[in-house]
Length: 266
Figure 1: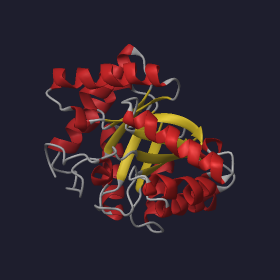
Figure 2: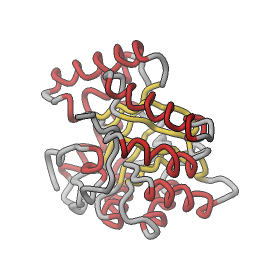
Figure 3: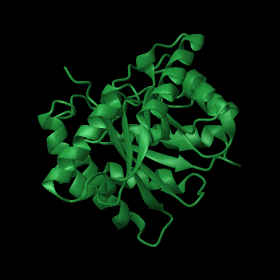
């Protein structure tokens, strides 16, 4: 049986001129395509702007995960934890976050506050999904120690396999199993995966499936350009090949990613 791959989309727009309407359409399209999550990225905006936008997206989506890129410099961890807990509650357990500054110590503090502070309400997921990016030594170790998703670059299969195997091996140092971290390759704009023809879509679906089957990634983070075409053309082909879900099988972002509930307060 083929390994089922994971799909997510990066939407640039937080703080941009399009505002909420520019985010709503790709979020709805991602949900129609059964994507794991939408990652909203924009200017280096501190809390609460990106999370506030996700609060609004929670009202117009029902299944896809909702994650924000957040500049945590100067942001109190408790403030961020409370905002993410609110999002997780509003969305029924679909919250995620991607810190762009602050390093591993900040992520550890957020996790500790989430699990131990009685003033933080219990949420459907226990704590939001943590997404990190990059392939440096520090970023690999951070992913192995504490992340739920690592985003890497998309390139030759051999390179992807080496990074994938290295990071998965590191999980054991922290008492974690390989399935506790999902590695997604950043494959660029969704429209770039297909040349717009049926033949091109079939070839691209096969390439994506092979990248996952060969152990180079668990799935892909796509840019939102050409997303509707990808959902209409490529997703059905992946489904036909048994490489992608045909329906959401759970309610939370963790369930979409195939991750268990985290230890600590739930």
